[in-house]
Length: 97
Image (cartoon, rainbow, N blue to C red; front, side, top):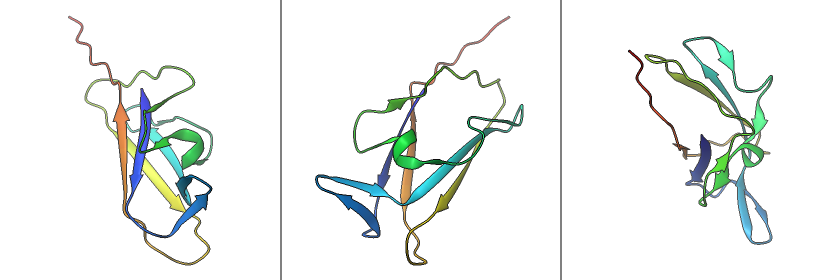
């Protein structure tokens, strides 16, 4: 599974040719209550911005009838709201009898 994002606001960090959101993300599998990481991770370290998805370090198994909870924490210098789309790519759905 890979992650990518698209931000729709001007309150982003500019770094030469790249624009990055001031945000950290924590993803939890609500079926097992298992967090993907111990703490929130910078969005730019976990996902790519408008490019190919960044694959996770190791595969995740998400049980059927489960859902993912995404907690996004912004750390912009000013109290601002950023419109952000987060995309999950490469999910493999399997059915077992």
